[in-house]
Length: 169
Image 1 (cartoon, rainbow, N blue to C red):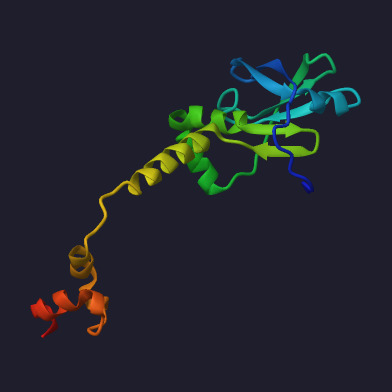
Image 2: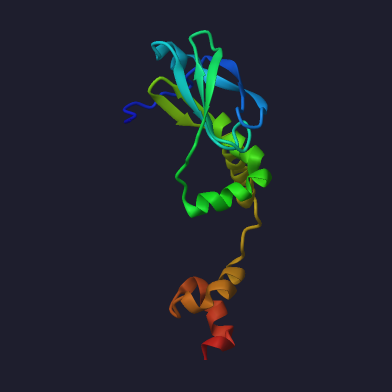
């Protein structure tokens, strides 16, 4: 799928759908974009990834009224070895995995990833960077001592320091 246009501040209508894992019976409500259901002719098949509701992967069939009409277990799943190692650590990262899905904005053919954590980190970095501009200005002597090996011997601005500097002999 190609995204040909980036839209900002898109309002997405979502509805809560309660999913129940057909294996362990864990329940969880997830936000489903209304456009996904509206575009389907009858039932919408949704693949529920591991870590979204529980540690199992399954499929759910949702009707036009946002009611789950059935589930299907996944009998076999191809995975990378690195993915399997990550699953063993999923209990430690379950909240982070769910945050990834909550930061996705999906409306029809429009997909955007707008993470809240990165936005907060970006603001903190900007605050830190702005703090650097308030640092004490270096004197000419400080600049010379810091960069003496890069300063030309004929530079008139640093002549006083060059004449006294024993490192230049």
